[in-house]
Image 1 (cartoon, rainbow, N blue to C red):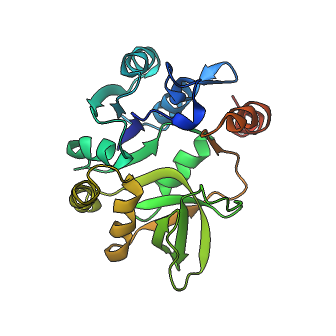
Image 2 (image 1 turned 180 degrees about the vertical axis):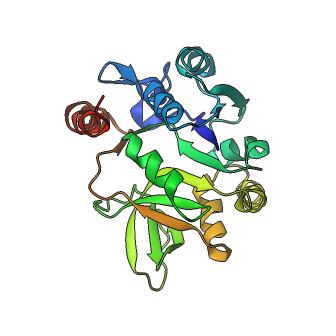
Length: 246
Protein backbone atom coordinates (compact mmCIF):
# COMPACT_ATOMS: atom_id res chain seq x y z
CA UNK A 1 0.00 0.00 0.00
CA UNK A 2 1.26 3.44 -0.98
CA UNK A 3 0.04 6.91 -0.05
CA UNK A 4 -0.56 9.96 -2.22
CA UNK A 5 -0.50 13.14 -0.12
CA UNK A 6 -1.96 16.29 -1.64
CA UNK A 7 0.26 19.16 -0.52
CA UNK A 8 0.21 21.62 -3.43
CA UNK A 9 -2.41 24.27 -2.68
CA UNK A 10 -1.95 27.86 -1.53
CA UNK A 11 -4.43 27.90 1.41
CA UNK A 12 -5.57 31.48 0.94
CA UNK A 13 -7.88 31.31 3.96
CA UNK A 14 -4.82 31.13 6.21
CA UNK A 15 -3.06 34.10 4.62
CA UNK A 16 -0.78 35.83 5.43
CA UNK A 17 0.57 32.90 7.47
CA UNK A 18 0.69 30.70 4.38
CA UNK A 19 2.00 33.31 1.96
CA UNK A 20 5.52 31.97 2.40
CA UNK A 21 4.86 28.67 4.22
CA UNK A 22 2.73 25.74 3.15
CA UNK A 23 -0.02 25.01 5.66
CA UNK A 24 1.04 21.39 6.07
CA UNK A 25 4.30 22.77 7.49
CA UNK A 26 2.54 24.77 10.19
CA UNK A 27 3.43 23.46 13.63
CA UNK A 28 1.07 21.87 16.10
CA UNK A 29 2.66 21.08 19.42
CA UNK A 30 6.02 22.17 18.05
CA UNK A 31 5.98 19.77 15.07
CA UNK A 32 4.82 20.32 11.48
CA UNK A 33 1.57 18.63 10.49
CA UNK A 34 3.29 16.87 7.60
CA UNK A 35 5.98 15.42 9.88
CA UNK A 36 3.27 13.91 12.08
CA UNK A 37 1.50 12.48 9.03
CA UNK A 38 4.64 10.90 7.57
CA UNK A 39 5.54 9.37 10.93
CA UNK A 40 2.07 7.86 11.23
CA UNK A 41 2.21 6.39 7.72
CA UNK A 42 5.64 4.92 8.35
CA UNK A 43 4.37 3.45 11.60
CA UNK A 44 1.58 1.47 9.93
CA UNK A 45 3.84 0.05 7.23
CA UNK A 46 3.22 2.29 4.23
CA UNK A 47 6.21 1.71 2.00
CA UNK A 48 6.05 4.75 -0.28
CA UNK A 49 4.61 8.25 0.07
CA UNK A 50 4.06 10.37 -3.03
CA UNK A 51 3.81 14.07 -2.24
CA UNK A 52 2.02 16.25 -4.79
CA UNK A 53 3.69 19.63 -4.40
CA UNK A 54 3.33 23.14 -5.77
CA UNK A 55 3.23 26.05 -3.33
CA UNK A 56 6.43 26.15 -1.22
CA UNK A 57 7.53 22.87 -2.80
CA UNK A 58 11.18 23.23 -1.73
CA UNK A 59 10.17 23.57 1.92
CA UNK A 60 8.06 20.43 1.72
CA UNK A 61 10.84 18.47 0.05
CA UNK A 62 13.30 19.57 2.74
CA UNK A 63 11.02 18.45 5.56
CA UNK A 64 10.00 15.15 3.95
CA UNK A 65 13.61 14.21 3.27
CA UNK A 66 14.25 14.43 7.02
CA UNK A 67 11.10 12.78 8.34
CA UNK A 68 10.16 10.00 5.92
CA UNK A 69 11.48 7.22 8.14
CA UNK A 70 11.69 3.91 6.27
CA UNK A 71 9.35 5.04 3.51
CA UNK A 72 10.47 5.92 0.04
CA UNK A 73 9.48 9.53 -0.64
CA UNK A 74 8.62 10.61 -4.16
CA UNK A 75 7.34 13.89 -5.53
CA UNK A 76 4.94 14.96 -8.24
CA UNK A 77 4.85 18.65 -9.16
CA UNK A 78 1.56 20.31 -10.03
CA UNK A 79 2.46 23.52 -11.89
CA UNK A 80 -1.17 24.68 -11.75
CA UNK A 81 -1.42 24.46 -7.98
CA UNK A 82 -3.46 27.67 -7.72
CA UNK A 83 -6.40 25.91 -9.39
CA UNK A 84 -8.57 23.07 -8.10
CA UNK A 85 -7.33 19.99 -6.25
CA UNK A 86 -8.57 17.68 -9.03
CA UNK A 87 -5.46 18.73 -10.95
CA UNK A 88 -3.21 17.68 -8.07
CA UNK A 89 -4.65 14.20 -7.76
CA UNK A 90 -4.71 13.82 -11.54
CA UNK A 91 -1.01 14.75 -11.62
CA UNK A 92 -0.38 11.68 -9.45
CA UNK A 93 -2.48 9.36 -11.64
CA UNK A 94 0.45 7.03 -12.36
CA UNK A 95 0.45 6.12 -8.66
CA UNK A 96 -3.21 5.09 -8.58
CA UNK A 97 -2.64 1.80 -10.40
CA UNK A 98 -2.22 -0.11 -7.11
CA UNK A 99 -3.92 0.16 -3.70
CA UNK A 100 -3.30 3.69 -2.47
CA UNK A 101 -4.27 5.97 0.37
CA UNK A 102 -5.26 9.42 -0.92
CA UNK A 103 -4.77 12.00 1.82
CA UNK A 104 -5.11 15.73 2.31
CA UNK A 105 -1.95 17.03 3.96
CA UNK A 106 -3.64 19.43 6.39
CA UNK A 107 -5.18 16.99 8.88
CA UNK A 108 -4.19 16.32 12.50
CA UNK A 109 -5.33 12.80 13.39
CA UNK A 110 -4.54 9.73 15.51
CA UNK A 111 -2.82 6.68 14.04
CA UNK A 112 -6.03 4.78 14.74
CA UNK A 113 -7.52 6.45 11.65
CA UNK A 114 -4.99 4.70 9.45
CA UNK A 115 -5.39 1.38 11.22
CA UNK A 116 -9.15 1.42 10.73
CA UNK A 117 -8.98 2.52 7.12
CA UNK A 118 -6.34 -0.04 6.18
CA UNK A 119 -8.25 -2.71 8.07
CA UNK A 120 -11.57 -2.02 6.34
CA UNK A 121 -12.94 -5.06 4.50
CA UNK A 122 -13.92 -3.00 1.46
CA UNK A 123 -11.05 -2.49 -1.04
CA UNK A 124 -12.08 1.17 -1.35
CA UNK A 125 -13.36 3.13 1.65
CA UNK A 126 -13.68 6.50 3.36
CA UNK A 127 -13.44 7.58 6.98
CA UNK A 128 -16.62 9.21 8.28
CA UNK A 129 -17.32 11.32 11.38
CA UNK A 130 -21.00 11.56 12.32
CA UNK A 131 -20.36 14.09 15.08
CA UNK A 132 -19.96 17.18 12.92
CA UNK A 133 -21.58 20.59 12.77
CA UNK A 134 -22.72 21.52 9.29
CA UNK A 135 -21.27 24.94 8.50
CA UNK A 136 -21.27 24.44 4.74
CA UNK A 137 -17.49 23.99 4.68
CA UNK A 138 -17.50 20.26 5.30
CA UNK A 139 -17.30 17.58 2.62
CA UNK A 140 -20.23 15.40 3.68
CA UNK A 141 -20.51 11.68 3.03
CA UNK A 142 -23.93 10.07 2.66
CA UNK A 143 -24.29 6.33 3.15
CA UNK A 144 -26.82 3.61 2.49
CA UNK A 145 -26.03 0.37 4.21
CA UNK A 146 -22.32 -0.33 3.99
CA UNK A 147 -21.59 1.93 1.04
CA UNK A 148 -21.11 5.64 0.38
CA UNK A 149 -23.66 6.88 -2.15
CA UNK A 150 -22.75 10.59 -2.44
CA UNK A 151 -20.24 13.12 -1.21
CA UNK A 152 -19.59 16.82 -1.48
CA UNK A 153 -20.22 20.16 0.16
CA UNK A 154 -23.48 20.83 -1.69
CA UNK A 155 -24.56 17.37 -2.82
CA UNK A 156 -27.68 15.96 -1.09
CA UNK A 157 -29.14 12.63 -2.28
CA UNK A 158 -32.86 11.85 -2.15
CA UNK A 159 -32.47 9.36 0.70
CA UNK A 160 -29.70 8.06 2.94
CA UNK A 161 -29.09 6.17 6.17
CA UNK A 162 -26.15 8.09 7.63
CA UNK A 163 -24.44 11.40 6.95
CA UNK A 164 -21.08 12.47 8.31
CA UNK A 165 -18.06 14.60 7.57
CA UNK A 166 -15.31 13.18 5.42
CA UNK A 167 -11.85 13.25 6.98
CA UNK A 168 -10.04 13.81 3.69
CA UNK A 169 -8.62 10.27 3.53
CA UNK A 170 -9.65 7.70 0.90
CA UNK A 171 -8.44 4.13 0.50
CA UNK A 172 -8.50 3.52 -3.25
CA UNK A 173 -8.51 -0.12 -4.28
CA UNK A 174 -6.60 -1.36 -7.32
CA UNK A 175 -9.78 -1.85 -9.40
CA UNK A 176 -11.10 1.62 -8.53
CA UNK A 177 -7.86 3.41 -9.41
CA UNK A 178 -8.16 3.42 -13.24
CA UNK A 179 -11.80 4.47 -13.01
CA UNK A 180 -10.91 7.32 -10.64
CA UNK A 181 -8.23 8.50 -13.07
CA UNK A 182 -10.76 8.57 -15.90
CA UNK A 183 -13.24 10.51 -13.76
CA UNK A 184 -10.56 12.97 -12.68
CA UNK A 185 -9.74 13.60 -16.34
CA UNK A 186 -13.40 14.34 -16.99
CA UNK A 187 -13.64 16.74 -14.04
CA UNK A 188 -10.44 18.56 -15.04
CA UNK A 189 -11.60 18.94 -18.64
CA UNK A 190 -15.13 20.06 -17.81
CA UNK A 191 -14.05 22.60 -15.17
CA UNK A 192 -10.83 23.75 -16.89
CA UNK A 193 -8.95 22.50 -13.83
CA UNK A 194 -10.92 24.56 -11.33
CA UNK A 195 -12.89 21.84 -9.53
CA UNK A 196 -11.93 19.67 -6.58
CA UNK A 197 -11.01 15.99 -6.60
CA UNK A 198 -14.08 15.23 -4.47
CA UNK A 199 -16.18 15.82 -7.59
CA UNK A 200 -14.52 12.78 -9.17
CA UNK A 201 -15.00 10.73 -6.00
CA UNK A 202 -18.70 11.61 -6.00
CA UNK A 203 -18.96 10.21 -9.51
CA UNK A 204 -16.97 7.14 -8.49
CA UNK A 205 -19.40 6.14 -5.74
CA UNK A 206 -22.34 6.36 -8.15
CA UNK A 207 -21.27 3.21 -9.94
CA UNK A 208 -18.85 1.44 -7.61
CA UNK A 209 -19.16 0.04 -4.11
CA UNK A 210 -17.10 2.21 -1.77
CA UNK A 211 -17.31 1.43 1.93
CA UNK A 212 -17.05 3.63 4.98
CA UNK A 213 -15.45 3.41 8.40
CA UNK A 214 -16.92 5.22 11.40
CA UNK A 215 -14.43 7.31 13.43
CA UNK A 216 -17.02 9.32 15.36
CA UNK A 217 -15.69 10.41 18.74
CA UNK A 218 -12.02 10.20 17.83
CA UNK A 219 -10.00 13.47 17.88
CA UNK A 220 -9.03 15.13 14.62
CA UNK A 221 -9.18 18.44 12.78
CA UNK A 222 -8.54 19.82 9.34
CA UNK A 223 -6.55 23.07 9.31
CA UNK A 224 -8.38 25.64 7.18
CA UNK A 225 -8.52 28.71 9.42
CA UNK A 226 -6.45 30.30 12.19
CA UNK A 227 -8.97 29.11 14.78
CA UNK A 228 -8.37 25.53 13.57
CA UNK A 229 -4.71 25.90 14.49
CA UNK A 230 -5.60 27.14 17.96
CA UNK A 231 -8.04 24.26 18.49
CA UNK A 232 -5.51 21.77 17.16
CA UNK A 233 -2.92 22.87 19.71
CA UNK A 234 -5.15 23.33 22.70
CA UNK A 235 -7.82 20.65 22.31
CA UNK A 236 -7.18 18.07 19.59
CA UNK A 237 -3.46 17.34 20.00
CA UNK A 238 -3.62 16.40 23.71
CA UNK A 239 -6.33 13.83 22.91
CA UNK A 240 -4.41 12.52 19.89
CA UNK A 241 -1.28 12.08 22.01
CA UNK A 242 -3.27 10.31 24.73
CA UNK A 243 -4.82 7.94 22.18
CA UNK A 244 -1.57 7.23 20.35
CA UNK A 245 0.43 6.86 23.53
CA UNK A 246 3.19 9.11 22.24
